[in-house]
Image (cartoon, rainbow, N blue to C red; front, side, top):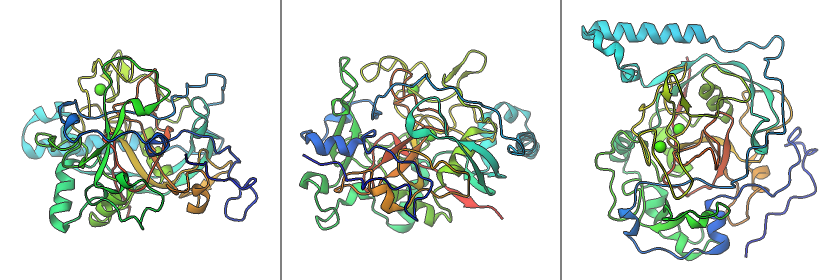
Length: 413
Ligand SMILES: [Ca+2]
Ligand SMILES: [Ca+2]
């Protein structure tokens, strides 16, 4: 049985963590934590190859807390990004592209806006976080970020294949680990493999993610549901079964980096800085806005949004910055280490807590974890209402699943 990492009596006063709120180490567990705790038996390779793509979501099941109400007004003197200018730029780009192709039909195709794979976010100051839903999203604070370019979509299987073919890169799921690299891990987790969502046939209580997550030997980005599965026909789906290390390797090859959480969240808001942000992925006027889960999680996905499992990127309307699937489809790795709260202070270009601090909020055998953002196709209103910009969860290093991917950013200028 694992013991929670010790949290030396408060860290708010340490020189490296001033301003970070004191928090209990009791927080949402992640897939690996649950696995380590109960040692779920491995399933036979190939069983899940017959299952629908991917799975689940997790992790704590804590309900949204409606008790909090906070002002949603922007603070005096705080400028939001110039949404009108961004919209004008996107429209100008679209019209120019259509004139070049001599067809007005492309004006009707949202995908035309994806012709440029990066979008310039001009930066600014906004109120990051939320105090309406889960406690790890607060406190809200003013954050200023500089300009940056961000991927218009999640990184796709096709793009990740280009990277692998150009570099010979082998993902963590494909290579496994030496015991010395992961002291304390059970031997089965050192073998190549990854976490796969296994949809229960009948409704189960959502207090135990082991009921729908399985460690599957041989699962990888090439075989997201395990041996026998394939990404054939899914070139335009987001790559999954990649770890934070894999995402960073891709980013370095592509001349970019993972976004900070503050950059990612600003981009995801698309110029909307309200709290609460919308929590209903269906708009009666414009239709479905994100790939999420409809029905009783985890046994029933009605797929009213047209997709069970991952969807091709840009299947849903972009936000007002022209970015697709910031919310839903797959969670996205960011560069920050995870602690279950934001520091209670304004910051400029924050890059998250130090790794040593984040390690205090994890099991010793796992080490510091990364932040993932935006929710996935496994997020349901009844469970893990996290298809929102402020939503955040921890994710282990060296471990992927089939509902986490990423996109990259580049410095502007
Ligand atoms: Ca869906
Ligand atoms: Ca996403």
